[in-house]
Length: 552
Image (cartoon, rainbow, N blue to C red; front, side, top):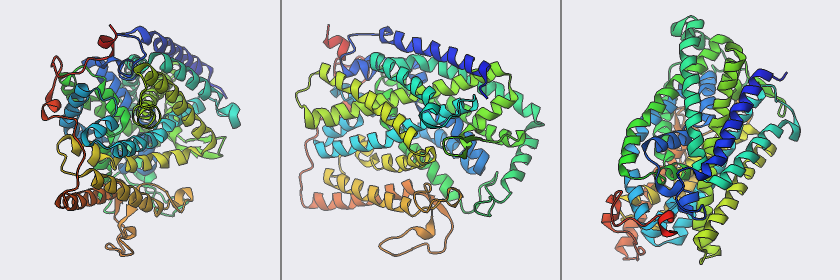
């Protein structure tokens, strides 16, 4: 049954941000939006507040707001890995993002693959980084749609076939149009509304709901009792509110691996490169952990849903319960309809902001590192911008098609694979910010070995609960870890994050092969950057003029 009050509030707020998306084309506008500096990076002049909302809206997505508490609801303490991962993230990336901003502003780099191209003079290595970024980003965009559909389903829009996906299609047609017109300014402006709504909803929820269900002691007790019950699919407890001896290593490596991966995603670096200067980034690396506090509070709502007796809604398209609806169902049952509508709008808008940034980032990679490098080398800035706009449409509707024709649960699995994939660019992107000792051909070999081994290990992972024999997640039991048929940890049920294992192998190959290539005096390509490029700041004469200056 359609919840008309909730749906009406949702639609009104959605229309507000739609208008903002179109108005954004004239907001803080420098030159015309026919240059990637303007369309894809917002003129490279966002200040502290805009950058904070933009990067926060980019990293803390709609899927985060439905999936993290859903994981807590289904598996318990393991789902809390998202909190330490976002805590250790900012100290790790604090200095690298400053160096990336500086060298990118000096040379006009728009993507991480641009930097790799300049650092090593290797179009092949840049191509691998670009393809990796696009492939890893696509399922991430699809998962924003999964989060949006969870909200729509809770409001009663739970049909089958194409008709059941019609509201989602309408939402993404609107998103595609205003992103095409306004570029990065649209999600930057809308992020203000998204974050204000999210903070309002979560703060009300974590104060009101625990008091309603007898306090946190009662809530944790209910969660512990429920998670201790055996799963019908496996016969084992579904989870625990405490980590076990078997999943502690997984928790650590998943948190650390996710932290290392996050700013390797092209959409994360897009927010960084759009900022005005290093001081802006420093302030943001200090302020962004406020989102982690919000995430920690949000994650606990998974346990609140257990205490409330919330049950996931059955997806009429698949016939299976959709655990991503847990938090929307909790809000629907415990809050007045008008406030639930506000909460659903916050999650829905929270899907549009990162989806827009991700599609822009993927489009930039396609345009600068594939289209211009291999298809049209003499492309003008105007042609680049037009190509990026068209590519952003293709990326968005590719993600929509993915949700329409592929089981959403498979999308979730692909996102886990996406983390393993993007981690393989760490040596070529992050380490290269500090040293060129790693040889470009060793980096290519390390990427190939890490990617192949990571995919092989992922293939070995089953998921009995979902009736999958392969690609059932990213947690590998050590007894399945194999090196040319040798099982060094045979019999061990301790789990580890596959991305971490693949990255270690990638680094070992890159280091060993680099030593060999240097000993053989194999040329490592030309470096277009200079040591001083990595420290240039706002106002420096080394900075390349942005598009609005160039077109005056």
